[in-house]
Image (tube, rainbow, N blue to C red):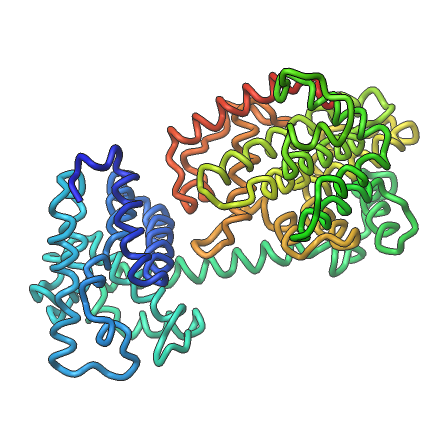
Length: 497
């Protein structure tokens, strides 16, 4: 491969990682895990951004030399012979040689070459010790070992994180830099504690909402009452119409036809009229005017028809009579729609397949907040003295768990419910599901594009978000997505009203 063949650094990295994936798909998974964990650890260490960029790229490519190690050696489960180990140890030098062809990668070569060196000089390929080893290589060595232990371990049995950290501690001062190893152990343990606390907080609605009695007449009491009635099925919350699920079922069937899809949509006169209007809008307008659902589906496309029907149906959840809530719900609606556009764009950018699935996720990711606020809005005449900002704060505190429980109760899959529960964070790890990271990033992009409920776009720093870093999407690509969303939102501003 010549350097001129690759237009950007990202193109080059992607090309090299494809070669790794062809050789062994697990190599790419391991490299991505290590790279993401290195970034988060480096941020925790408050290292300079230039160093973080270097170690991220180095971690992605650190094992590329393994593609030239015979499979009978690299995949051997039993202990390697002396000759086999000598062959295996060549992979760092092979990696360096492969990457040295590209001048754009020259800064990461010392990290690649030295990531198997040891503090006491027992490592390879040069037997460097202590301060002779680049700090990036020291960090990569620790994170690389940790991921190997928790994902494969000994004889292909993964260790628990606690067991793996014990191994890291035992190698501290001999194989690993003592200070860095200690910081890494604390970093992982702190991460685990935060995750447990976050999980407990997110599950609060499902476990016990009666532990603290809210003061009479407070916003918290009203929301708690809504939740308790929901749990007892004493309240009928507005939900997405059955047509949304019916369409999902038809499209998931390999034998489904456009006629079946049309028959379902035609059952709902309001949605039918609006879908035909969309088919005739500037987004899809063709040479002939669309007059029926059967004509609209081929023009729009079956999958996108599903998304538009879901959008039309979803819009009804935001309609309230109360004037105070009307403006609030309109902002929340625009945020959800912008998030859906962002999720679809990100899925297309990352080539994740069914981009319309991500559109739908973006559309419903805040459904818990929507349902709580809509119910408050419909009851607002009883609570005119309540503060709107306080309502938003209290709704935000429980919206992920409430939304997740609502989706489960409505028969949506565990995947949708889990996405709804975890998309807000607050903290993500290197092994967080891509769907959750993407939804978090999409929501923040929507805010940055000017479609937040209360947030100022200038206060949103996309470049520092863990979700962006873990997904590996560069800031210029984010800027393109933001411009696309702003154009789409302008084009459809009146389409779904």
